Length: 153
Image 1 (cartoon, one colour):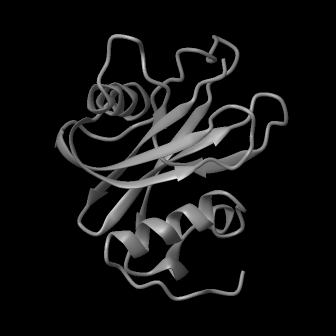
Image 2: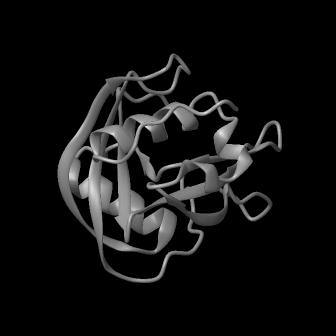
């Protein structure tokens, strides 16, 4: 399903950013991604972000300011990415579902992880080597006021 905008949540807790470890259905490859997805016709942007976070992590969040509004990398799914800073209101993060694609035989979200925004050297190598996730994390670190050192990966 092609959508114009992916609404994403930069869920931050104690200087850490929440990421989801997803498994691509076609290739079986794993990658880290921030929670998010497409907006339903009856939702505001903030309601969409809250729903996506709830579905994918079981967390209830308060949606704060828009921190990134950028053109998507041409993957054919989205044209724009809108990322909102979010704070946890309640819940414990755990893998949720992708209702549009998950089946009894395949679950997309395999794990959740906290990534220290103060020290990217502690990040999982899967994120460090990802050509989409790593640059996004660096842009988020910059806009959120964390160090922006460049790392050789």
